[in-house]
Image (cartoon, rainbow, N blue to C red):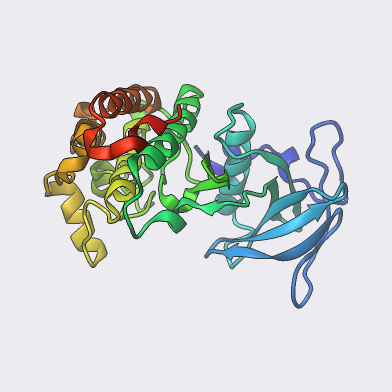
Amino acid sequence: MTASQAIPAQLLRDHRHPRRGHGLMPRPVAVASALPRIDGYRLQRKLGEGRLATVYLAQDGAGNAVALKVARGSSATTAARLAAMAREFAVPAAIRNNHVMRVFDLWSHDGVAVIAMEYLAGGPLGRMLGKAVAPEVALPLLRQAALALDALHGSGFAHGDIKPANLLLRRPGELVLADFGTARRLNPARASAPAGLVVGTPRYAAPEQTRDGAVGAAADVYSLGVVCYELLCGQPPFPGTTVLEVSCQHLMAPVPRLPAALAPFQPLVDAMLAKQADRRLPDGRAVLEQIDLSIGAAIAHPAPFGATATRYQR
């Protein structure tokens, strides 16, 4: 996908030439010393900042809390960065699913893209990591992630960077998939990323992503499998201390065993973390079905989990 193919010009039109009727009315952005000034919004604080964009909490004209993502850095106006922001808006905008982040608007000022999207007050799933999460809490969250992947894969896209930072909570117990800047169309004939382009995060990347940059539904499944193991056990399955060590573990190390009390979930972990993509659960729908089987097995054999085993919510 080239930048010119990915970004219709009307999506990133300068604010001096507004285009009506598409929900994409451009608004000027003026950068102040502290927070940007963006017409139609009152910025309250910075939520986070990465190498390519900054996210702010803001209020719109009706007083609703929203998140604004503003491109930043030396690449903010490059064709590749604008393509990523346009894709990050267009993919979730085309999907109607409660577990996919809602986006509201996309516009530009002097070539810098801005996205208005829902504010997810619960923050990233990563806040729950560092200790084991009870299965009756973890599995419903993973099931919601699988619902989001099912909607995404069913719409013809792969996410490319499933990790705790991109799985956020709208409220306690309600998970949402976010950040679609790495999303790619599912195309078996062109599964690999362009030469030199690294897609994904090493600790969560599937072996084929590490090996040749391949992005597909099965790679999303593997990454969610890493998250699954980390939620259940309190640590990642391959806890190397360097990128090289972690990548080698993803490529060659066997899938670790869960503690005995979590045995009903071993088939789920094994099926998601298979090294070969063609031996892995293929997509979000298959993950959803396997999660339901795992929950059923845990309910049928509740002894290791005590009374809490009856509290699974689907």
